[in-house]
Length: 277
Image (tube, rainbow, N blue to C red):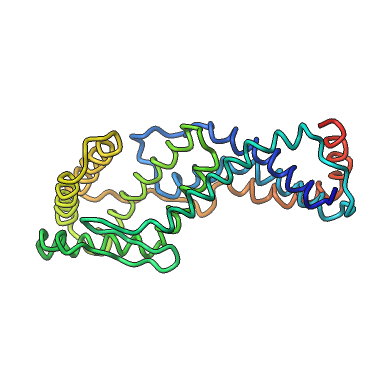
């Protein structure tokens, strides 16, 4: 069997198991914690660290493995099927998300590669000049950080960990932290908190006329109340953030080490796994 096919089976089986298992890794902060946006963003990606290290090991093995590798056992191929299905589902949903047309009554930032701010005429007509400037600055903050792309990637990673509820919980926690971070950034650019709060309330009222009281809508309404309360209070200084979290640095250093170990010990280890699988 070609080594590339064996490599693909091993990645799907070993990395897939690691990703699915890591999806159940709980958050280390509660929903009501003031977790920073970078911290919440890292919490989405850190569960992928074990799979990334395993992938690096397999890449090291692939580099020196002969072209005709040992055939992958049937049991190992069957173990790879569940993750292959989840991967196909995630790719399908990510592709579908790119083709869904934008339709909103308020304001949003769209565009994966080229962020564009879209403000509905009905929404802008419902705001005074200060609130409209506040809503626009909030969306500019999203555009500066390429948040549509980041949101698309975060949702794709979450889909890879389906059906773990902790993965969805980490995504929702990041979305919450993201909106508050962009609120804070808008205020740092001279926007009054009261103006942005007014724009958020108007947006909620417009959406309320077309939305039914589902669980998602009620969660969004709770976030709106929380954002408005923060915006009407005096701005709080940002917490100091380290450039690179220690755990992130450990993972970054572990990946080249894993490649090195794969090149020197991968053939024996993978050969034993293929024979025992």
